[in-house]
Amino acid sequence: MSENRKKKQKIFKPKARVPRGFRDRLGAEIAAEREMLGKISAVYEARGFDPLETPAFEYTDALGKFLPDVDRPNAGVFSLQDDDDQWMSLRYDLTAPLARFVAENYDALPKPFRRYAVGPVWRNEKPGPGRFRQFTQCDADTVGAPAPYADAEMSTLFAEVIAAAGVSKEDFVIRISNRKIVDGLFEKLALAGEEDAERRLNVMRSMDKFDRLGEAGVRLLLGPGRKDESGDFTDGVGLDDAAIDAVIGFLTSTVAGDDKATLEKLGAVIGETGAGAAGVGELAEIIRQTPDEWSSAVVVDCSIIRGLEYYTGPVFEADLTFEAQDEKGRPVRFGSVGGGGRYDGLVKRFKGIEVPAVGISVGVSRLLAALEYRKDVEQSARGPVVVLALEKDQMAHYQKMAAELRAAGIRAEVYLGG
Image (cartoon, rainbow, N blue to C red; front, side, top):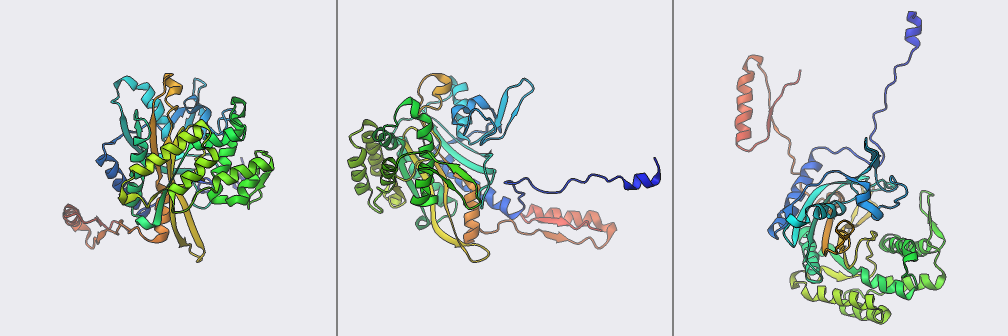
């Protein structure tokens, strides 16, 4: 090959770029997250929860029908086939792996089993401001304890960990609802049959966006469909106007600052249904058991649905109420930084018996981002003391100086640059 031809050949150079929806993190942010996780974990451990770590991958069939689309394993999750042709998926949350672990080790575990878990989860979804495809969750769950006492404890625990993370009491609220009152609504809408399962799930996902999209956006999702700011179109559920009015009436039944009035209003709407009456009763019991210290932070809110179908009773959502400003001075409201609820049927998929369970999940990455906007998080990662190596033959002495500083608890390094 001639020299000229060699010169004409181009050497491929990959473009250095992070995949869309993912990000690199450095220094101060990681240190701040580590500090926050330590505070949250301390609250969990003080209440008797033990740590548990599960693999990043689970067999896709273990996640089952709770995937966004079981016919397309990569819709909503990141999946691959193992060398034995079995589908595996990066965990979507930390709850499905817990159900698999409990089922696999059921006889050896204490009852109730209380665990907390910290780790990254992955969602193959469209990213947006503050919404990434990989983020950290910090969960606590009680498996084997029935409603409503464990649910009341969990809602109070949720408030405690958000406060421990550094959010003032007046700047957040734990909104609670109950999947059973939604079941009561579906009875009224004649969508309670097995053949209506997919439509119910789509209705719940639409309802779950009420806080973010408002009444107009949810009406579109329940009806013909909605186009977002980017031009992407989401298919609607196709309900008629009367059914949409009923759903919106349900979502707007919350009476701000008066849980008793909200529950009375709910009872009037869906109290004649068995599921609705049970849900209202459980919510009333949770409110009754909430300590006075957190009574203003735990409130009933019918707009809290939670999108995953595996919830069977009370559901929770931690919502930041303060507003911050971005670098251009525009208002930013972060809203939900975590959620959870009761899921009595999740272990049953493996064991064939119903095992009561309830848990919460803190979206650490989103919570940390909110606090950084608010500048409530101190930059705990301080620059180290740098020992200048001015004389090369004294390098061992410089290293000893740096070691003595580190022994005293001071970050230190020897400058080794050219």
